[in-house]
Image (cartoon, rainbow, N blue to C red; front, side, top):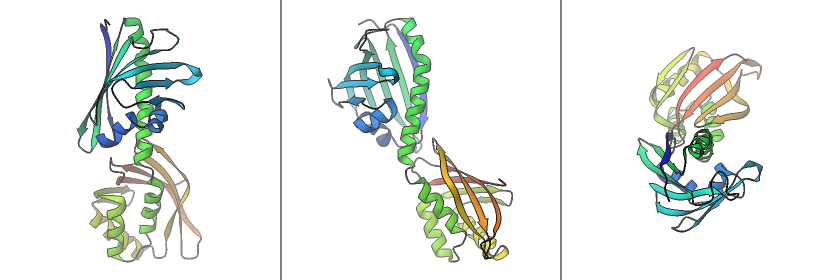
Length: 254
């Protein structure tokens, strides 16, 4: 097989390599970024099957598999166009990048036209992939964000710090018009000050989260001790590859 043309793409996925690689070995996770009905047999010679939108089908077989760092498989279209199964080869390599994962894609093709047709395809597909991984890592995001808002009414410092250890990185940063905070200890002290100067004010999440690749937006309402609204706004939460809150930026207003 002569594969004289290729494309390369490198992306960083906000998850550890073991988690990222599981999307190449688990059928449900494989289908989450390729499409319902797509499957993979994670062994040498195992079948790779992809069901694209519009009932376009691709298939191939696993050539190499070395968890959690490398997967090689052949790839082609069941219809035979633009090239048949087995007529191209995909290599995916993973390596740690801090707590995240650097993914390198190398796809070899029989001709330049086929390569060019796949440039945007892989740009799009790896974006879907990153979101699928993020959705898994951030599955507990809503609970962590609700716990964050509950912190602002917690009077006990030990309880605040214990909660922060469970939901946020030790270096968590918080920014809004009244805050320039770095670190869990300073954040706990800042919350105590807010309770002193705004007694009885509590925060409630308003509506569902909006999430994309490790960042979430949560709307909130502040109410006073009489339950009357005192303000509202939105917080932008950035999560680390471990699923913990790394940074929060708050915006007052609708």
